[in-house]
Amino acid sequence: MESPALLVLAAGMGSRYGGIKQMDPVGPDGEFVLDYSVFDAWRAGFRSVVFVIREELEAPLREHFGDKLKNKLEVSYVCQKLTDLPAGFICPPERQKPWGTGHAIWSARAAIKGAFGAINADDFYGAQSYRVLADFLRSPACDEQTYAMVAYRLANSLSEHGTVSRGICKVSEAGLLEDVVERTSIEPCTGGARFKDADGNWQPLTGEEPASLNLWGFSASLFDKMEVLFREFLESRGQELKSEFFIPTVVDTLIKRGKCRTRVLNTPEFWFGMTYAEDRVMVVGKIAELTARGVYPEHLWR
Image (cartoon, rainbow, N blue to C red; front, side):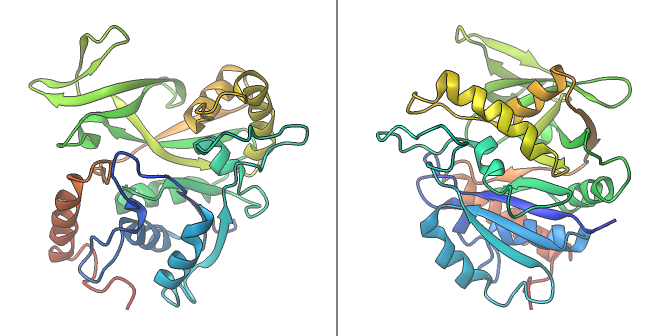
């Protein structure tokens, strides 16, 4: 089968981080977290990458990657624009907030023709996660009706510096995703983890739950299905100035409507990311440790 593409969601505003986290150097040679994601994907067999970005990030990203990806990956840039909507819809003039991860993926519909993986630019997913996903995307199991999500053990995906939101997954005996429930304000605690419910009360979690971190595998059939749901979203919430069209909600809705099935691929990797400014020291340390162990070369692209 044709080599899969990697779709990178890199248009985020970084409001909690306090800066452009997808372009914050954390590696020994000035690499971003994004460099390690692209490097891991390339080693796993991905042969093209599409960056979904804000317009002002295109020039610095092009300069950063320069010739680094030459002869390795075909590179494309897609600007996520508030005005890029299905025919018949107009963006409210007062809206400034992007339409969300679902819209970011839909924005790349003209750039992707086959199977693809989708990731967040500021999350470190680990090499094994890309290998598991690439194997699925290259297999006959990936078709117009069958997608995939790479699931992490919840305890392997929490931040030491604040609470996080995670999609807690229910998985069938056949290994298919049945349900994703978004839990907010999750933090580690003695005995596992905990989250705050709608009333502000702490509820227990074991830490063993499969968690979604927006590491997905799709065929290009997703785009047409997604447009139907995006139209529904815009009809009901398009006039709200901060409403967001999220990819986990898209997948969950398609599953419940019988429009797709989603295989859950498990990874032993530990996630880490740049959610809070305090996370940066931890990220730099973890990448230095992985480099020292030989998981990554000291100069990633040389």
